[in-house]
Length: 146
Image (tube, rainbow, N blue to C red; front, top):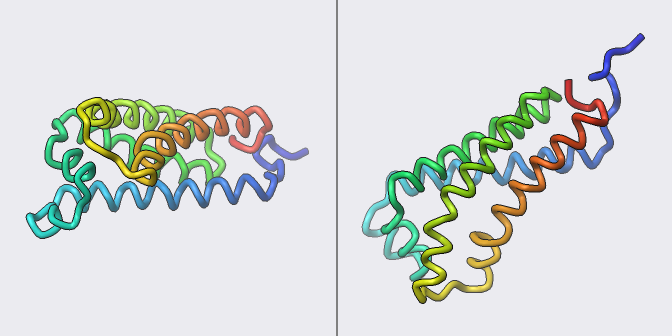
């Protein structure tokens, strides 16, 4: 008799986990890059990016760290088929929400965002976080997570 974690996951499970892990590893790299920001690096940023990096409060930076590293760990745990993935992805979503508050303030302050920046910062990041929490619950209910 096989255990519940022996159920074979659909190929899309692996695709979603690997894509999401890549996304969150890139977020970790972005976080580390921002910790080591120099005037030369600041000069390379767009107006919107500059405003977000320079004016980010400490609590939003902490939210960014929780979002990036929690999401990375959550995706790794999902790849390992561990049910704890759901809790780390939920924690990551909370971090996304906290780190997004200055972005929403910047939008209302008149800073212009390109379509790409708006899509990545305002739409894709919270939607991926929401999707992954839902997906982790879904695959847990299917028996793909132990």
